[in-house]
Length: 311
Image (tube, rainbow, N blue to C red; front, side, top):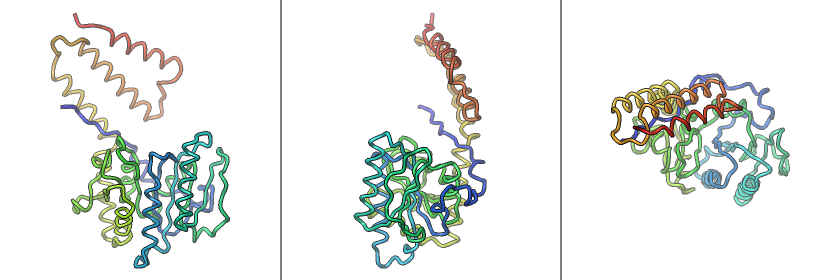
């Protein structure tokens, strides 16, 4: 059977307190309001529209008085040269207008700002778009005590590091019932004692129900969920766990011995995998071995080893 080694994240980076408001670069980001957070590139395939549609349904429920002071923050990579990015932002804005949700835009200094709406007081803005958020802005939003949960809207995503980052910060996650989140997360509805997320089909009504449940969490329930989420991130998705996973996979592979009639020496495969693991580890620790002439040498070595045939 194939071995699965999950990608790891630097958990220590998520233990630091949230940056101070003066480091955020915009007065619109810092807020004491309850916040639903969505972090994805501004691409249509990321299905961020699902988050806004669900938020609009939640706001439209007359019985949900707890949602009155809640805002939604949507941040992600935005390239004004890409038509998909431009069209996606305009589509999301049109959904806000359709549901009478006030919105504002925080542009990045490196990107020409798109047209902004008439200014609305930050305390009444329903949806805030952040284009090309900075590291400080992202850390603040993930670590802010006002952030209620992370909405991860893509369907059939390969793995998705976003839910793992949410867990590392103790945030509950709302995600689709497909792709990576079905492995990285545990649904609270099917397993309350270990659940850290609401896994739902990509239907606005179902997601609005999940958001309402998040709003209704008691302080003790929220604290217990945050502890479970942090423990799951540490136990399964830290850098040490990834390294252990690679090591055990290599031991098991080499323990199988040489395969008869193999077109490539198993010894060479071990060396290739070992080099790849080494490069991955070094890159994660700030060493770039894939730039300039080093990349060419590395590729040539791999090619020579791969072409070597068994006798």
